[in-house]
Structures are given as C-alpha cells and as structure tokens.
Image 1: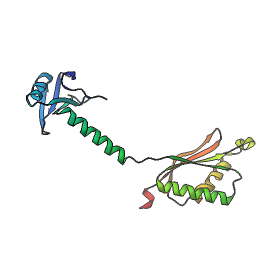
Image 2 (image 1 turned 180 degrees about the horizontal axis):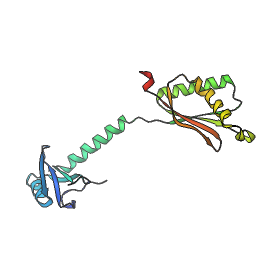
Image 3 (image 1 turned 60 degrees about the vertical axis):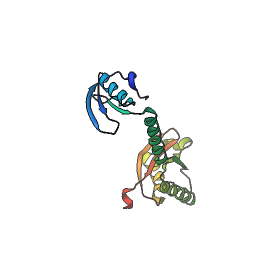
Image 4 (image 1 turned 90 degrees about the vertical axis):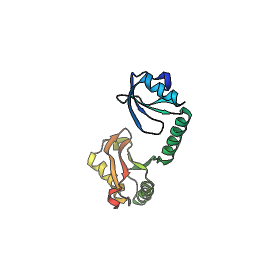
Length: 172
C-alpha cells in the first residue's frame, strides 16, 4: 500500500505526530499541512485505517529509507520452512522404513514440515482404514525427533497421508 503525502491525504482530521516523535494531537488536515510546511518537512499518512488516521511530520525520503530498512530486517529474520515428503507403500520393508524415518527426523530437527504418504495401488485403495493407519504408524514410531501431527490421517487420491511438524514443547 502506497503512503499518501501532503496534498494526497483525503481525511478531514488527522492525529499528528511531530518531527521529534511526540503526539501533537488531532488537527484538521489543512492545519497539519501548514505545520509540516513551517518545518520544511512532509506530512505522511502512516496509519490510514486508524480513527482518526495517523500522520507524521518528517522528510519523505527518510521515511522511505526507514521502511525499506525495516522490511529488509524482517525478511532476514524470516525462517523458510519447506514441506518435505516421504512416500511409503504397504509392503515397504522395515529397513527402508528406518531410513525414511531417519531422514524425517533430520528434517524435523531443521524445522521442516513433513508429509508422510502411504501410496496405494490397485486393490490396496479399498483396504480397511485401520489397517492403513497402522501402516502409517509404523513409520511414525521410528521417528526419533519430537513431533506433533499438523494434519491428521486422511485419505487422498493416491492413498493416505499424515502431516507432521516439530514439537518444541516436548523438548523442554
């Protein structure tokens, strides 16, 4: 959303914040503009949805610089999480399940979300639900990292799935 400055501001009244950061009070827009012009600065509408809208008296270039700096800092602190996927079949052997569970544990440690999919082919799609859940639970029991179930067991076109996330509460 683009900020409105000086004559672009449409509100009748504004809560004005001075150039040093103090709250000056509520003024008609025209009077607030005159205050900004007296200081050779701009009037910038920083919170248009507030009642009344909030405007700050400061240099517009400086305001843009500060906003860009805030955005950059927030972007640097943002943590990227991926959804990793593990596919198993009904007949997947124990050793293969252990390998997949080990990979899942490492991904959980890194903070990723994991989707464990039970891939069903042909007649296997019509097997009993509790049997399919038990097959998915075989993998979940082998995962060493603490996790919580983000999306419970559900049927999908390929078969069945469950989504996991790292559980930070159990580590304390």
